[in-house]
Structures are given as C-alpha cells and as structure tokens.
Image: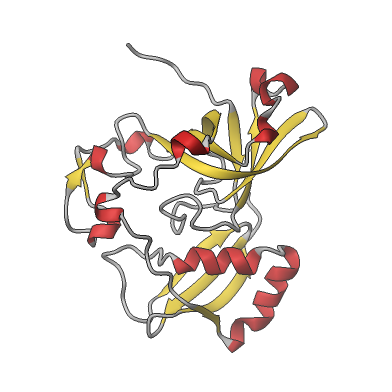
Length: 235
C-alpha cells in the first residue's frame, strides 16, 4: 500500500550543504534550528502540550537524494568506507523510502506573526529538510541503556581544533555575527567530517555554516582553521 506524505514542518538549519553534517544527532549540541510548521499543522492546537517534553523525535526525509536511488548494500564510514553491509543495518542516506529519524532537544515553541515555530538543537538536518512527523521523546521507553550498537557501539573520539593566526580576525568577526559559531564549528570539525576515502594530509576542506565558508586543514591530527569567509549572496 502506497501512502503520500506531506511535510508537517520545514527545517531552518545552519547546515547549508550535506558535507560535514554530523552523522548522528546530538553530536553537535550547538547546532540550533527552527521547525516552521506548515499548512494545517501551523496552528496552536497541534503544538499544545509539546513544551512538557525536553526532547523530540523528528521523522524527516532525505530530500536531496530521491533522484539518485538506493542500493541494497552501503559502506559505513565507521567501517572505513570499504566494508559493505546491508542498507537496513546502517543509517545511510540512500534508502528505499528516503526517511530518517533524529532525537533533538526542544528549546521553545514560539509564534512570529502567523508562523508557529519549534526551536530545537543538536539537529543533523540540512537546511530546507521536510519534517514528516514530530513525536515526544519518552525516556522510560525510548532510552535503553543495555542496547547493543554493533559496529557503532562507541562514540567516535573527537578531534581537536585550533584557529591559525592568519584566520583569527575572520574567526572573531564570525563570532560577532553568530555568538554560537565557535562552538558550532568546533563540534562539527570534532567529528572529522572528511570522507573515509579522502583524508589526504594538509588538504584544505570547506563547509558552509550559516552564510559562512569555514576552511580548514588537518595537520598532525588537529583541525586547523585557515579561513572563515562570507559566502556571496544567493542569486
């Protein structure tokens, strides 16, 4: 049986491109986003009582992957990017139905004019991601401390970061524009977002956070920020 899904909300996120988005939610607590409620769900009644909960489940879609299809096996980065496992034994983005789920922290529910907004943090969603459902996180049933995580049992070791002297003025300017930028950048780079097959010494990488291009190199297993450049306005 086929079922047509319509978004209940759209996500505003600091992540403007897929590269460097954390591979799991809550790895970057400084990533703050807003869920803009849509159509019939943009009403007080739908959100009544939501603020009783500290965390939420988001059911969402990989909206930029649909045309690329999917494969029955994938190569998880945690296994070095070479070992193949079944798609259902992974959280890969290319899936039969293109759906994902994330636990995020609820900050507040607000209203701007006629727009109802749910503000959350710890998200791992691209800007513009469609949200198909929002559910409360219930600790007594959703938190399972004895669960086994297979090849992803342990959290990855975070990488250190430093800002090179030449980039300090740009770094300070970025913090003036976005007070949480330093935490956001450090937490994003701590996950080592480089592809497993592309970790060349001293190669420069870049990621778009908000409207800034963060550039860095990995030197002696340390993320060294080389520049923070404003992006040109969108056409």
